[in-house]
Amino acid sequence: MLFNIRTAFRFVNQVLLSPAMQNSGEGCLDSFEQMAADYSCLTNLLEELSTAVYTQEPRPAPPFEGPDSFLSIMSYLNTHYEQTVSLKRVSEELHLNASYISQLIKNETGLNYTQYITELRIEKAKELLTNTKLSLAEISEAVGFNDYFYFIKKFKREVGVTPGKFLQHEKGTGDMPDRERE
Image 1: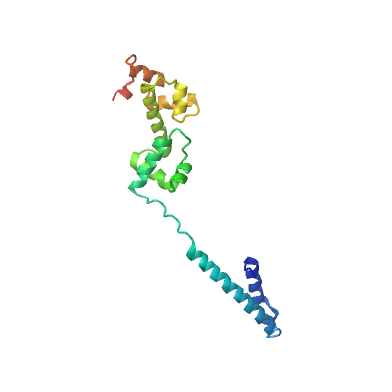
Image 2: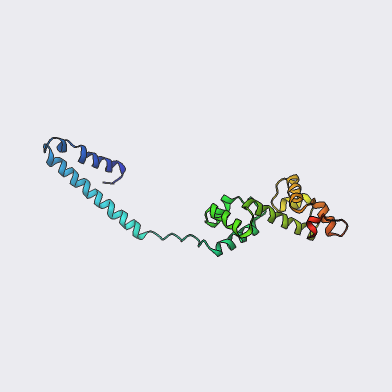
């Protein structure tokens, strides 16, 4: 007889709500025999459960949350910045708590998660601007900005000039504002 939740409820009901328990012993022998059979089934179930627990493969330990975690996070972000790298996704990929990741980045960089990703993407865009002949649209896409105009807006906010002016300055044909000369 297979033991399941239904059998367990039946067993409890038979014991607690049985007529034998309510009617001072009438039919007690029949109820006792049924309870003994159910007890035997319960014992078999516990033995199977015990065997399953002891033969189960051990689960891998979660990664250590310490200095290595920060390096793992930075490594992951530096190799996946051009993709959608939501905090939830990073958390799932690295098997770390999202709040822990966010707090660790804030403590180590002084930036919140979104600010850090934006700054990383802008730095990568600056590298591509100076080292490649890709168009601004291609660069914005290559560093993870799906919207070209949003990329230009974020670039200007972070750097102080548009990507075009930044490129002119890098080529020596334009001036940078004081903010970037530091």
